[in-house]
Amino acid sequence: MHLACSECDAVASGEQIFCLACGGLLAFTIDPGDYDAPRLRATFDERRLSNDPLDTSGVWRFRELLPPIAREHVVTLRENALPVYGAALGGSHADATNASYLHLGMNPTASFKDAGMTAAISHAKASGAKVAVCASTGNTAAAMSAYCARAGIAGLVLVPAVGISASKVAQTLDYGATVAAIDGDFDRALEVVRSLDPSRVAIVNSVNPYRIEGQKCAAFALLQARGWRVPDWLVLPGGNLGNTSAFGKGFREALALGFIDRLPRIAVVQAAGAAPFAKLFRDGGEMVPVHAQTTATAIKIGAPASWRKALAEVRASRGTVIDVDDAEIADARAVIGRDGIGCEPASAASLAGLRHLRAREIVGRDEDVVLVLTGHVLKDGAYATAYHESHAPFANRIRQTPTDALLRDLIDEVTASRV
Ligand code: F0G
Image (cartoon, rainbow, N blue to C red; front, side, top):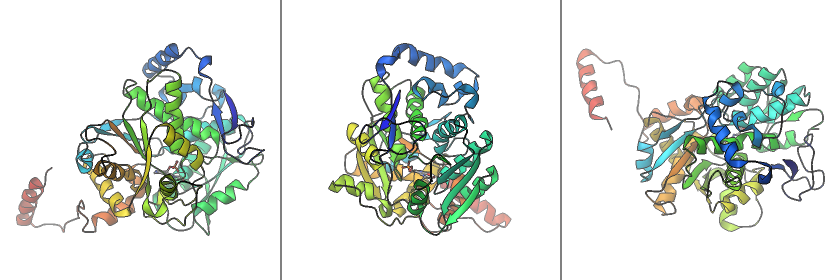
């Protein structure tokens, strides 16, 4: 396994975050010839029966495919023990018969960020880092704070002063990190973090290649949970685009090793007010940053750092990139709730996106589709409450305390509303 620039191929060391030659993002590469792949896949499957903390983690179970980190430095909260749920109502909302949810919100800090953070903070600990820093719309912050607490590393997060979920800030404070609200949006916060000296602080945004290595394991964990059966499509929300590049990398490595015989097609869904990647995919050219606006605050990002890597992955998978508006996201989120699952707003871009892809016949009705849910429903309680106080199609309002007679009517009404 070696680390090099993803753009100019210059060799890099684990102490860098960006390429010293061209400033590009770094990436690890495996050499499939280094592995006895059938034996390795069998080992991964055997480890699902083990109680070793490293094996119960859906990241470290795949440790041979990760940059080596000594066991005593591994900081794990048993991340990525991931459920895949049938998406009955979600499927009918999108006119798709064979959809399921991969719920990355069922992680220790309730978002997909834990899978990357266990790798980044373990590396930081192994390197003797004293402080870790990130810019965040909230979930990276919470994950970093928790893993820092476990590692004995101080955490500092830069968040936009307005427009992020209060639950995420509370969670971040609870685990012990310092929160600094900056006068600006996520893109500004990331700019500030990128200007820091990586020899003084561990920068753990998804520009950190260890983050991507951890997150690529969600692809392995998904395939493993499905008996290594490849879905036709993976649909996921896109913001800074680290997760798209991580999933793409995971699937490509699984293919290169012969764990699977084809790649799933990756569909990235952005919020319409924060969709520079969808525009670039449609129109070609370079990334043109936008001033992001969306109520799906987790993906309110106008200058995605990993767009080059993500574009290569989407193309390699014969995938696509689209955008959906905030009202569509809101309704899709409510439908996912009614499947008894729930997720935060940004996550529901996946289902809203599938509805578009079905309407345009880009995805066939009976194709096998995995919708990635990136964050838990409780990540943004205020958003859910506001939705249910509105008159939106799937809103379910709180009623006044009923009298006995009204209660009987209400029970009849509730019974009739069963789907
Ligand atoms: N979904 C959720 C719930 C997120 O928190 C994020 C990103 C994304 C999707 C997009 O993933 O950036 O890899 O394309 N949240 C970051 C944060 C930016 O700071 O928590 P991406």
